[in-house]
Amino acid sequence: MRKGVIQNVIWIKLLRGRAIPICAVVVLLYVLVARWLLSQHPDSEAQTRFLLNVGLTLAVILPRIVTLILSTTHLPAEIESRTLYPLLARPVSRNRFLWELWTAMTLAGTVMMLMCSLLALLITPSVQGPDLATLLQHLVLQAAALGTVTAIGMALSLLMPQAMAVSVGLVLTFTGGLIATAWGPTGAWAHILPQVDLCNLATRYTTGMPPMAPLQYGSLWLHCILWSLMSLWICSERFLRRAL
Amino acid sequence: MSPKVIHCIAKGVWLEAIRRKEIYVIVSIGCLMILAFTRIRFFGLDGLSKFHRETALNLMSMCTALTVVILASRQLPLEFTRRTIYPLLARPVPRGGFVLGKWIGVVSAGLFCLLLFLCIYLIACLVLGAPVHLTLLLQHTWLQLCMVMVMTSICFWLSMLCDFDASVTFGILFYFTSTVFSNFLQEVHEASGPVGQTAARLLNIVIPHLSLFNLSPKVVHGDFWPPLEVGVMIQLSLYAFGFALIFLSAAWLQFRRRAL
Image (cartoon, rainbow over all chains, first blue to last red; front, side, top):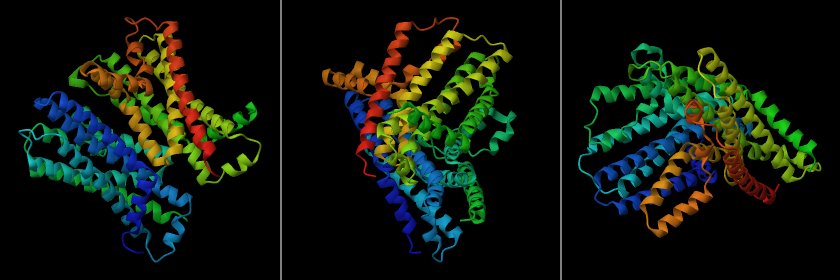
């Protein structure tokens, strides 16, 4: 299989399926609103920080929803529409196919996230305080979190029906960390949930906090890597055993 | 457009939802989330029963909306990709009847999901000895059904414009940002000049406000809030029917124009 084929498939699907245009409309709406608010109160630093925070949070949420829904629906759709057969009839192993699919979806999500973040940074005037290293940490961690979300979505899509996979994926992606944090030390079991929602350093950046300590940052990375590997392993096991 | 045909198509939606066990699983996930949430002691405080009940009602509404978004978004596109629409439309089934049947099927599935949640809520309230304000609860249920109708129509229309993934993404985004958007329009109206105010008013009319269909704070604080007046309920119902009709008609127009 030629390199980049699956990458192209994912981009075409996102563009033709109008997921990217719809996200673009949402982002455009944010840009218009932000510009209007900034024109009303040009000197308010608090408002600028708030708008930057909203923009960066949007850049976290939108790609996560898109990649999650794409990853939970793509494989079952390929199997159901029988487009997987001509792909796997070529000399390509199922694991390689999964790996390329995961890379393609993660990359698509990362590009979306970077573009949205860049837009949020460009439209808001610079404010004093935010540390560039924190921003860099945030953007790099987002790529890892998107990889985890994609892997979880792919695993769920082979474990349960579509609607369940989307629902469980959304709950795990957006509330895992919240549940674990709110439960506190009494509910140690809650910490086994994926806590991708904690991998969002947008507020840390906009409030001007320093970068995370290497150990703390590393633990978030480790959490993402472990969940990605585990989900990809589950996905691979289910996919290899599946009779096509 | 015979009622028998519409009933048959709606039954098909039901059978598919039951066979895929989606509603039960989403209800189970919702219940697990509510259970997990009630175990949390915020700031170490006890006796947050009202707060927990309000959150439970909001989670129920969220899970119902999620079910409806996913069910509604896949109904029409799936018929095309699976090619099951051809034998159906080869019979004397008008396209309008087909869309209406699907719509009734999804709305009734949403109602079933809502009723399942309400049964669980009522049982929990009775077991825990919490007061139940029945009139407000029934009003809340009716308005949630109105929300289900609007969301179903919007997702039908979206699924005709884009694919399943994009339709679900936008449906979910719309549901979760609807309240924020309503509040934002109010802010814009207060802070802007004549042009901004006109734009805010126009958007206020064009975009459905889902927050109007959520009575959960009133249901929980029923000892202070009287039930809504009949006139208000009728107005809210008409508001929902109007939007449902507009979006469903838009979906039907798109569906009618689509080449098979």
